Image 1 (cartoon, rainbow over the protein chains, first blue to last red):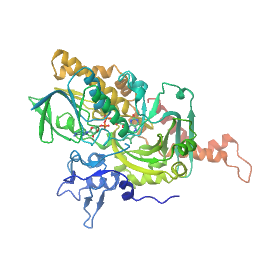
Image 2: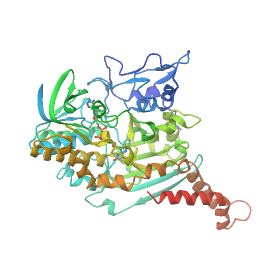
Image 3: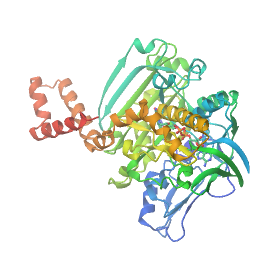
Image 4: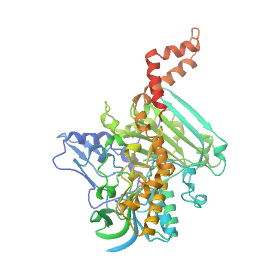
Length: 94
Length: 428
Ligand SMILES: Cc1cc2nc3c(=O)[nH]c(=O)nc-3n(C[C@H](O)[C@H](O)[C@H](O)COP(=O)(O)OP(=O)(O)OC[C@H]3O[C@@H](n4cnc5c(N)ncnc54)[C@H](O)[C@@H]3O)c2cc1C
């Protein structure tokens, strides 16, 4: 069996264009909110993780703009928008 | 403020189909798309059934850049250590006009956009629509890149999260139970390797669905579609189950584990993974549909919730195309009356009701509920696998009678529960 590819390698095959701002932000004060914990499981790119203070943190690089975290966690804990036009993932196959 | 007859937000299948029909009528239509090109943000499995939509976009299908026509339908039930597959091949599916094709959206959407532009539609890419402009409760335009653009009608074709419908006050952000997430990898293989591996002649294709242990008891399943020189391999998992089922698992690990199954490894061996994508899918069925029209606004495609989970396949593309076309027809009718109020635009709902779109949604209205049964993703695949394993096993001792083997695998309680699920299943 071939080696499992890391998420970095998987995402590395995609075309991403940088944005001038982060399009998803955890709302201040909600970093430890129970609703945010769902993001640890549902993000297809595995971009959410826990830091040493047990807060959920989001690394926006590699976001596939799928919308799953918005549905799973809700807009009370996430400030969620699509990237600006001309930014973000550009699928070549889709 | 610049004004157009119609503004369409989103150059997916719904938006492009609407634009094509409007432009053909000589109506001034602009499509605003946030991606670099149509399809740049769009993900599907995917297979498109052409028959339901042929009449809605006549004349275009002969040149459409579709991948392979599906002649082989496969279903595989997976258990942790075995699997049961069925393969159905039909000569009928190999006759023109072919009834279904595999597709890649970046290619297909760009082509459909070119057809709409040729018909006279204006396409603006790389622009995100940020807001909806309302006047006395009526939608009169949108805001993009800080600029206000006006229109008689705005059509929200901006996909499953539909910020346009949200900003217009027609919907609120969705609940996990009405949505699934789809993950997919595109893996390139040389054409001949792919055809030999899957037993295909020429442009024939395979659509293979997987259910069972791959989602670890969660609502969902896997899919594999053969394209011309690649396979689309992925899975769909219910978001609520991902949140609630314990022990929790990161969804992308489910896909990794699925890919490492001996059923999959030889199919993609030596292939070049070229893209990893994901997208939310509306799966609320009839009950999950959003309001479809308002004063100066229509909602089509995924934005309206027009995606249906029919057991182990998702159907959304035909609904997107057909609802886009019917939105265009409603606008044509409203223009004839020069009245773009909700009551005039409500003919959109009527068009949908009389078409396969709402008929299918009504026919399959119980599907989400019936499928929300973890036994379909755990017990049944395992039951089938274990039964076949026992039937095919020849041990050192005497072999049991077939009826005894079946009885051993199926207790009375289980047969009763199975009967109940079967009755539920009759509803779908
Ligand atoms: C993994 C997966 C597998 C699937 N498999 C199948 C299948 O096999 N068969 C099938 O029929 N269906 C399938 N579906 C469903 C199908 O892909 C969708 O129903 C279909 O793509 C919906 O088309 P649409 O035009 O409504 O929306 P989309 O294709 O999502 O298009 C929406 C467009 O709007 C744009 N947009 C969004 N917001 C803005 C904004 N603010 N400003 C400007 N532009 C914006 C987006 O960039 C996008 O181009 C699958 C879906 C997934 C995710």
